Length: 432
Image (tube, rainbow, N blue to C red; front, side, top):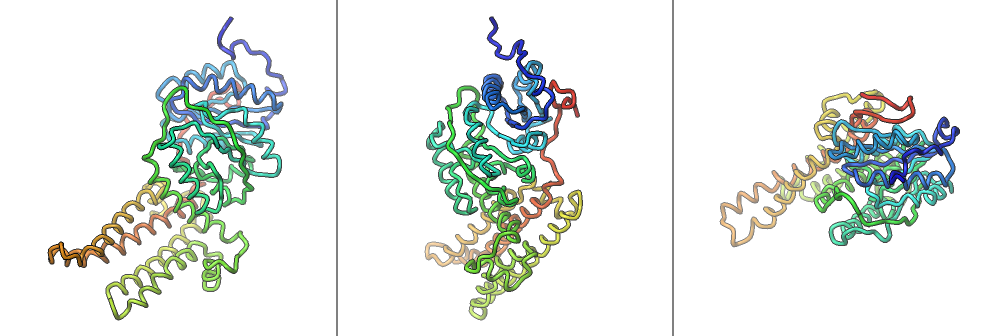
């Protein structure tokens, strides 16, 4: 008697061998050698109860352990299994993007490879999807993770994401989701954007629902996440809100009570989305500059100059977005800088610089008149205020508008390189 549940399997019907899969299961993995075998067995058992032709795509994100070797052996016994191996680690978002791109099913389910997501929830996700939704998110209501380092930050982040993006999902970080392939394949994924799939899916008009799913403690391996990602998530929330506002503004019904739409539609062409955003952002600085004019000329001129700079930045961004829509590759030095130089995440590169400059300028502004500071130091601090605050705001906004350019060019770039695809189906075996 063998302990290998896959050895000698002969129960796959000819229909499922040759038929195009109706369902694709995408599982990104990184150093999960002890988890992939039991997970595949659980997935197979659930998918056979569903009855549709299916495929399981494990995306090995450059694992350094025996994950790929285990999956390659399983491929010899499991006709539905496809193993995609990256040349080097590219991150979970890239692994999900590769799986979505290569998936052939009309419906796609994504899940983690650490056995914390339970495949038993897949039928319920698909049932909800068939009610007319394009995306069904899992909600780990009884999450089995460390409370302070994982659950508390997740609760806070999900609440903020819901308020900022207008997509009130309880658990954006849950990888267990079901998608209509025709929709998710339109959503560009890069730079840890998998956490914002619900919000980003609204750009293509996705109908979204969620259901409660099971969650289990990690048994093998080590978690890849920690508290160090919190500051990146906060920057991402700001960037994705900006992207959603710009790239969906022309398709959403206009709300006459919304100040954004009333001001921008009255003054600017609604089709100029990035320039309209810049106009709204610059308006407070023009108003503030006019209020300060005469009382503090340096501050007034700084505000007015910042407003003009934002308008120029908006016009430049609009031009780069239009170029991205008209070409099949990333063109222009600015687009190359935001896409490749900033690794397609300008807000993460420029945002911290801008925030730090703004904070320092604010501190000098508060402290320069304090009696406990030497007069010379107070004078220096007073002179540094506009030098730090104005560039800080501009640098942050430069990163924010850079996100729009990077997003517009997303369809021209891949964040991963596939080394090998292994499958028992001849048309799926390749090596690059």
